[in-house]
Image (cartoon, rainbow, N blue to C red; front, top):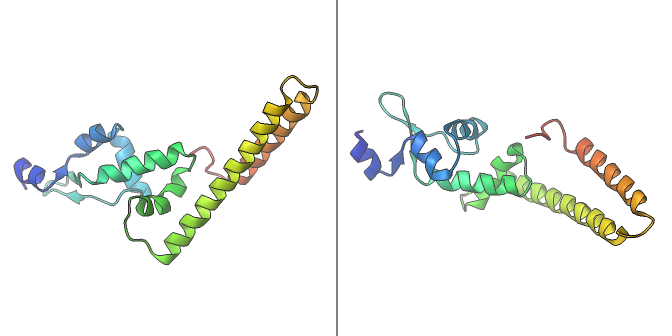
Length: 148
């Protein structure tokens, strides 16, 4: 396929897709490796050629990451979030991930409210201890890929 027919077919290079999405080519390859974006077509020379709509996968992944989801959690959510068909199992996984994230956020809000209420009172130290306890629990429950 020539460059003109690739562009007419809506196919772009990894560099162009990365520029359009505001990420690096390395990020695109990593998301591909994780299965967050589908494997692209390859040219006769072996160069990756991505459909422009893959940009929506990347935008969705970045938005889910901003919402606090780990990369390992994004794959089951990304297809659903952009309106692609998903299996019943994928839908169940997505529902569980969303419920877990909402529960975690509810706990964070509760701790923040207690901290806000303690401002200017003597129990600020007790609330600080509670925040540290909450953080330890969050780290312990987040599993081995918590840093991702």
